[in-house]
Amino acid sequence: MKIAKVVSLMLCIMLTALPLFSQAAEEKPQEIVFAGWAGEEANSRPIIDEMIDTWNAKDTGYTAKWVGWPWDKTFEQLIIRTEGGEALDVLQVGFSWALAMDEMDGVLELSDVFDKQWLEENFEESALSAGMIDGELKALPWTLASIGTLYNPTILEAAGVTKIPQTTAEFESALAKIKAYDPSLIAYGFCTKGTTLTADFLPWLWTFGGAVFDEAGNVTIDSAEAVKALTWLKSLADKGYIQMDMDRFDLRTIYARKQVAFYHDAIMAEGIAATNGVPENELASTIQPMLLPVLKAGDAPQSSLWGHLLQISRNTADKQQAADFIKHIVGEEMSLKYFAKTGMLPVIKKAMANPMVQNDEWSSKWVEITKYGKMSELNAYAQADELTKIIAEELQAALISSKTPAVAMKDAKTRIEGAIR
Image (cartoon, rainbow, N blue to C red; front, side):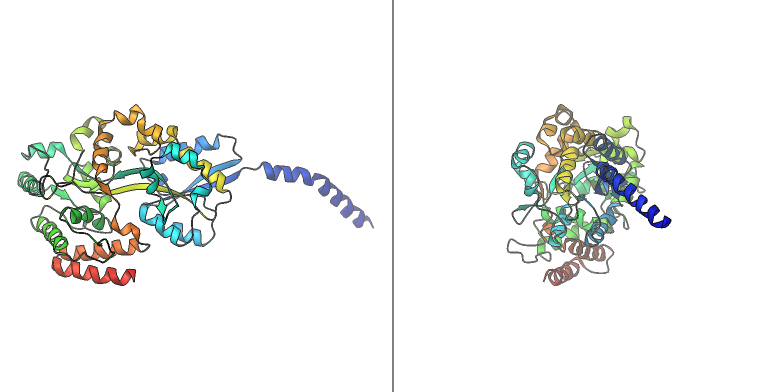
C-alpha cells in the first residue's frame, strides 16, 4: 500500500513537471550541420569558424557546427552520410559533385526554399546557372573563378625571360631558359599524378582545338588535336621541364619554396603561398597570375571554370533554417571576410561591387582569366569522377612512355564510352 502511494506521488510530480521539461526541450537550440572541406584547410578555417560563431550569436533557435574532411575525402563522405540518413544540412560541393548528389536524390530543389526576388537581387543569372541541373536550381554558388596559371616573376627575370609568354611557342622557349638557368628548378609544375592531372590537361586540350566530347555527346578525346596536345605535353616532360609524381598539393608546397616557375591553381593560390611560408612583402615577386598561352596569336586563352557550390541535404531537419544559414555565409559581410582571408571571389552582387574587390589587383587579373572560363565537359556526367580518373590514368601512361599518346587517347575513348553507357 505504501509502495502504491509512493508511485502515485511520483507520477503526480512527473506529470506536474512535464510542461517544464517540454519547455526546456523546446528551448534547447537545434543544430545546423555545415559539411565540406573548407574548414579543414589552414588558410580558411578561421573564417569558417567566424561564420559559425556569428551565426550562433544570433537568436535563431538553431546553432551551427562544422563537419569536414580533406578535399579528396569529402565527396565520398557526403555520399555515405547522406545515404545513411545522417543529419547534414548545408553541403559544400564541387561542380561535378552537385550533379552526382542530385542524381542520388540527395539534395533539395532550392527555388522552393529561396525567395525568387532575393535570388534575382543578389545573383547574376550567369552565377545561378552554375547551380542549375535539368532546369532546376539544385545549388547556389559560393565562389566562382577559373583555374589559372601562376608564375614566379623573380625566377623568370633571373632566367632571362623578358615577357610573359602568350603563345605555346613562347611558353616552351621560357621553359628552356629556366631549365638552362637552374636545372634544379621545376620549370613547369604540371600535375602528373592523381585526378589533378586531368584538370591541368583539359585547358591545353581545348587550346589545341580538341575536346572530350563533341556537341552530339560522342567521345572525341582520341582526335588528332587531342593527340597533338598530349604529344606536346609529353615533349615537355621528356625535356625535363615537367616533373613526374606531382599533384597540386605537392606543387603548392614546392612553389612556396621558390622552386617552381609556372603552375596552375585556383584564385586562393596567393593565400596558400602565404600560408606555406612566403612572406607578405615577397608575395608580389613570388606569385602572379597570367592567361594560359594560346596556340596562335588571336586565339582565346582557355581556362576551366572552378568554384564552390552550396546544396541543402535531403536529410535537413529544417530546410528554411538551412537556407537562412546559406544566406548568412554568402551574404556581403561574410563573403567579403572570406575574400579578405582566402582571396575567394564573392558572388553576391553587393560584395562584388565593393571597393575591396574592385580595387584589388590580384582579383582584377583573375576576373580576366575567368572571362574565358568554361565548365569542364566532364561535369555534365554523373560519372564525372570516374571519367576524370580514366583520363588521368591514360595521360600518365603516355607521360611515362608506357603508351604512345595516340594509344593512350584511343584507350581513354574506349574506357569513357564504357563508363557512360
